[in-house]
Length: 390
Image 1 (spheres, rainbow, N blue to C red):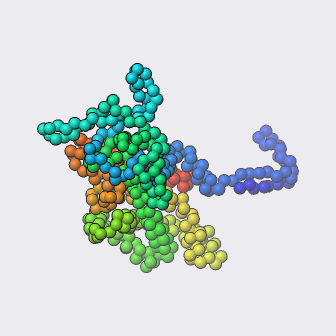
Image 2: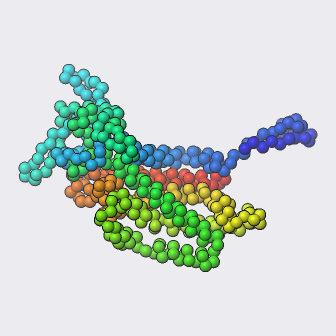
Image 3: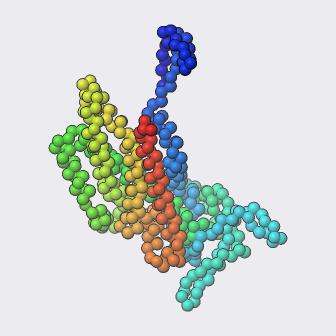
């Protein structure tokens, strides 16, 4: 925003004042509140890095079929609980020289006759060449566009490449983790959207009208907040018919999680409405003839936008952890749906953790990384929400 002012009086002179010519326009720049918020946000390097991580996770979920080396349900029983293969850049030639070749080494599997336990040993003689943008198992991107090109994979479809190991059915953990990113990240986004709608609308009505309307809404919030979540989740999950499709169960679980996440936001919006409804700009808009709907959605709510964005950013990891906990306990999403919580179901016993620790490390690491990134991003947005604070 550029403001023009004209100096018509005689210029002042002095050691600290520069002379100004009469009638010459002076341009002064004034940044808007969103510009100030963005400037303050980008100064927080940790929040910027966290935002980039969140963006990358959503891109991974969006293009999961292309990024995954294999289909999530493709199994090879001969490679049950196989350890991760190391991705190497150089291969040793017969003459001892090193040649650049993106590859992994194969396995040699043996079975202990006493304990019947499988063990895998890296076989340096088995070289599996790896390429980028290779043809593999056919898929439909977003369920619409048929394709068979994968970002990375073995040059021969019959070869094995398990960069993060396999599970108890011989399925590639990396592919399942990438596909699980779509479900776990989107369930938080959809759940928070529903919670945002309920929290903002009910909180606004409660704080704007007050009286008996506020009393009823607050009593409903107190009843919901007093309910024990785990037993209630168990009861609601048990009520889901077994004949429902995985997609229907996905949306029901999203609805269940979101129904208990809006109460905190509603109370925060209510408190801000109580503080703002008597401000001068609201009184001026009321005297100007603005309707109650216009007062809420055009005057008061826009002043809370930055605060609501920060609250939503901090609520997203809560939704993701809730879905992961429900699926881990077996009352949330179930196979064939792939999510981080479903992947963690394979790491529920000590024997699995001892023999195949990657089944716990990678899904749990994805959850921890996402939650920390959201928390750092939320902290940065919360600080940037008040750009005038020093």
